[in-house]
Amino acid sequence: MLILKDFNPQNILKEYKSHEKLYSVFLYNFNIKNAQSPKNLWLGYSKSIISVSQFLSAFKNEKDFENFVNIFEYNLYTRAALPMLLEKEIYGLGFALACDALKELGYLQYAKPDVHLKDIFYKLELVSDKEDFSTYKSILKMAETVNKTPYCVDKIFWLICSGNFYLDNTKIKADRDKFIKDYKEAC
Image (cartoon, rainbow, N blue to C red; front, side):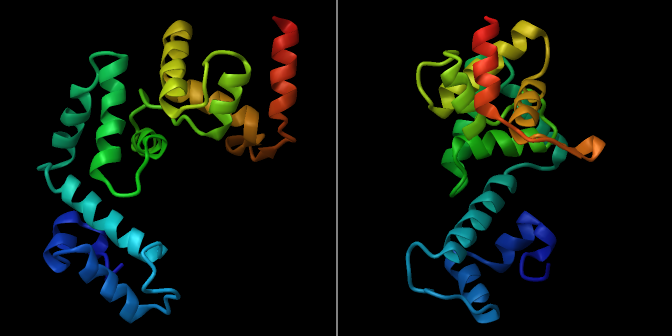
C-alpha cells in the first residue's frame, strides 16, 4: 500500500512525522465522514499506525524483537507484562488485542482472553471476575496443568465457542452455554 509504505515502520515515520500528517493524507485520499470528530476511526487508525511504527522501529530486526519477547518468559507475571507494555505503547491496542497480536505472530505462550474465554472461565468458576488479566492468568495456569501451550488452550475454547473447524472446512452449531452446562453436570 503506497500510503503506508508497504507497512515498513521506518519508512512510515520518515514520511509522516505525526499521526496528524498521516490523517491528513487519509482525508485527502478517502471520503471520510465526521472528519473533525475526535472519535473518528480514521484518526484512531492514524494514531495506531504511528505508535506501532515508533514501537517497532526500536528493534533492529525480527531477531531483535524475538529476543525482546523472550525476556518476558520468566514466569506468569513477566509474560503478562509484555501485553501490558504493548497496551501502553501502541494506541488503541488493549491487553486482549496485544495478547492476540503476539499469539498471531507465532508466540504460542500467549492466549487472547476474549469474550468467549472470559465468559466460560467465569461461569465455570475458574476466575472470580471477567477481567482480561484474570482470565489470561487462568489460561496460562490451565496450559501449564495440561502441559499444552496457552495458544492450544485458547484454540480449543475458540473452537468450542465458534464451531468453526476451519482446517477441516467444517462448521457446527456452537453452544457455549450448553458446553458450560454439560461441564458442570459432569463435575
